[in-house]
Image (cartoon, rainbow, N blue to C red; front, top):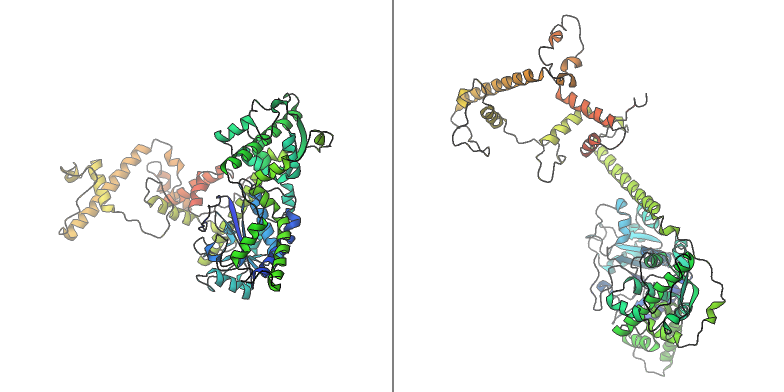
Length: 633
């Protein structure tokens, strides 16, 4: 699913969207009441959380002026929001946890959630979904409700609209609930929240100018904008960092103070992993020999420069947001028809105004972080307009930094995640392989029964006969398909090229014959006699060719490398074995299939359980080797 069109600027690609639909939205006041209840429900989880770019938020969308960016929701009163998570994927999954929490505590709500990848929840459960579910068939089908994931069945609603799906959920909820494996796969990503959210926070000591310390003391969430300003800096932004006019008024004479800064692990990694030289105006950093003090001062340098670049760029570009002021709130109520055309001063108008004031007061407490992130310049100016001094931070006790071992030991966590995915893929392949064998009546419950030497020979013949291209050879899709091969034409050409004795008529390549092997077919009027002559010529050629090869190979050790037919047939008495005693004169007949399987088994055995050519080739053909029971004996 792609981003819905919008009249406003398109959000960044690293953004998650969500919309909450009540079953019976009757009026704006009802939606406002629901909004307050939801905010109070999630407040304990979000109060101290530092978001990467913007906090979790919810807004009202009502007719006739909807604010939601999804066109299909325009005529449906609902709550909606979006969250840019950037490099911190944990923010997205924390938002998913909050939405599951909301759906659990408010059973009459249906919730949609998607991002730039589409229905990303289904990506987590891809190995357990019904086969008909794909990006083309999932529009208006995927919802959260009552703590579970729901997929509107295809046989119930072939092409559902959003309204159709919401009606179906409110009346037939049990029919759309996903299977347990799908639910488990998705819930496994959020099962550790909200504890995981606290784990993703990192507190660290930093030495910063007192102006920066003052701002972070009043508004700790502004650290995310400072990190963003530093991490996304360009040449123009570096010009602001070179002067530090806002946060370093005294220049090199500014005294640095030690403070504890709380941020996400992703932010800390973005700061620490980059090399950055201090501007000339910045106070001198401690010596590198004093490792802890130098690390604290270097981190403070990056935070200070990031804060300066963010502040100056927003001020220059005029992108400062206005926040949710009372005037803006009243304008939105007027556009939505909240006052229903009532005259100011009437008792009903007064009642609606009181409700609006109460709603604004309560929601402003929760929307403070959102307003701050959209209007940081104004808030920074307000804070620095207050009196402050170095003494305010000198005597305070600063806790030590959290351990950052996780920054350097991520390989184990990555390998663990990859192993989980690998196991999931193997179980998926095994499930479908067994299902396919069950359909063909080949699954007898025994692993050793899966290996059939006769099948190996047939599959190898089909593989060799398969026509290859510049992309390589592939296993035949239809193993019973006949290969189109003109044997008569092949032998005719071989005779002319080999210049075989006794074939005077074909001893030389005819003039005018094509070098691209484009030969004329036999005359259709040759009749039966011509066909019999061709058969005799083929037999003669094969016999002569075989005898010539035998003579050349007799002195070599090649005969000992193959299993002859005589070794496969048990001797009954001495009389019948007389011919076998003279096998030194001629080659024993060779069973090609037996030798092929024997060679493959020998190659597989020499691999000692490791990947190799035999297992790779036969695995491609769908053959499972038996275990070597003689190993170690």
